[in-house]
Length: 255
Length: 345
Image: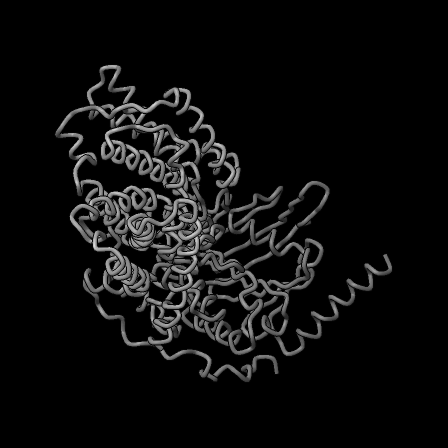
């Protein structure tokens, strides 16, 4: 691939989406710079998951434009979005608990032996171990079943798998949900590592501002289907976010 | 400060140390590892204990007359269990196998009576069995009927059809020496079929994409779908496989006894196959199980069945004894597995 002139990995303009009478998104404008970690925050029902499903190619927007690396695209399917390097790590992680780490890393992309339709386990094991080591992810062995790993380790494996499948744009859906502080720190470290490597641009969806402020370069606040705040991370941002949320809360209460 | 490290960031205690670099294992070492890691080891112990018990109680148990009987009973059930395990692993079940087992030999018989060569008749019967599997799969996957219900329906449907076409009468199997010898009418032909199928299916389960996808589907259906695995294709495929094996098992058994019998009396082969799979370590919730384990599980049940018959257990209390024995075998199996786990750590 030749270097694109744009520095934007993702840009969306005027995205709207309604489900029946419910207007989930009312004109979202958002951009993700290359190598950036963008935090997408907002309460439940603000439209975060709809926006992510649109970027994943799972849901089609009613109106609006999507640009990937400066090219306008129509993300008509998950497969197509994936072919553009957009990978999503869902909350359920899409890992098979009864399979080993390396089988999960290669799930539905299994390597076969040259002459037989049999799995090339040695090669998958080696590549998975190499890749996890490169990403500084510590697990007892790539042979263990996913069910034997902690929540943080599972999340790390899911992220590693997405990166390994050549993700250029990584969408992380609540990567620290239901995780203890230590486990969460493990994932935040991993996201920092990815940022340093600079090969992927990341959108991290979360409702926890503190965690987002830990690793993100910039934060977008989604409220009632629009981005109401778009700021780089600064020491005062937490206060601004809280104010924005309280303001909306009061408006709604009065209205 | 915003960009401060969390207190736990550098604390690595919770993270287990990375293990030794992955060893390169040979095919046989992997085979050995899978074998020992699963429940098979404890099922083998249960089987050995039972063999010793029945041999001590009755001299006729390990004899050249009885071993073929035992192996044939094991084989017919194990062939069905080999398919059933694939279905159970991907989160489905097939209750209609006992009826397909009875149905397929009649298809073969009527095709042969109509002048079709025996080999072609057998293939036709297997194809018809596969179609039953396809129907089971299609109703379950596309029409979203739980497989427990779908196959309960086809169980009665196939039983009814078999009774209608057969007039509920027994018929003899075709007399073609070479084919009938290969297809079950010799002391060890059925068990050889069963061993062949078990080996092939265990390889399919452990070393092919189909097997890995079957496990992934049972383990996390949404996740499997998210990574792009075609769940419907794999499930329907396993329904077809299961019905195909049920049909084959029925044909082999009919040549063995030289008669084809109407369904009602023999449908407990389905329950035995499922019980064997479960005893062999297959989890009814899906995601886990092995073909070898199911084979050993059916072997344990066959030993119980055959052993009690030899001991002349009263027919009325026989089922009760068998039921109790299944429970005891299961409890022993679970206990032994826990012991083995404790020993590893």
